Picture 1 (tube, each protein chain N blue to C red):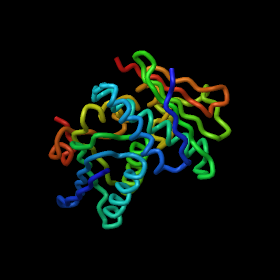
Picture 2 (picture 1 turned 90 degrees about the vertical axis):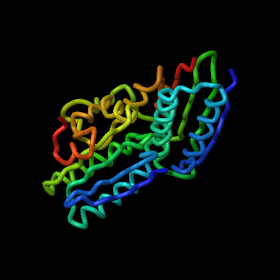
Picture 3 (picture 1 turned 30 degrees about the vertical axis):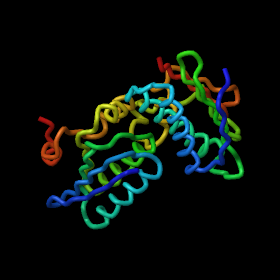
Length: 134
Length: 113
């Protein structure tokens, strides 16, 4: 499976173009579920903002690499930053009573909910999202 | 990306939003609400009827505004989020934190019935 690739600087403006490119690609597959497209957009937004803000820490000299494509019936999106990674296996539950009112920490739980699969590399600076389309 | 319209109903600011509530747009909405707070209004109702997207940044902004308004004995109430938006509140359990109403009148009364 050949994936389309993009390399963009760590700016919040650049992510909007990435989102447009990926959603245009999804549109061309013929996939038109309103709920599904909402899910893809939300997961992509959370992933890209995390990579830019937390991964590359808004350092515009660092890039974000995005790869996307369809494998059989599934949309695959990979996002990699140049940061130090993080321990994705010990994230606190943002819906726990003592964390529910905190204004941060919901991005990854939303990605997990709206995608069918999410896998990080060992370092935690690359993530692969999978969403069943057909 | 996010259209904003503010109306005043007595001491309440009704903020009608349409479009997408995410990173940059959340900042714009926060600024609009901050202007209301600076103007002495601490009761804010956000009409979400035509909102079609919200991210965790949008949720964060709403939580921060809620805390600011609570300190002023005010409130933030949400009206009529579309199904996909409401699901985000359900999934994050923020539907237990925010008061969400079907109509503006119910939100003014603070009574969902």
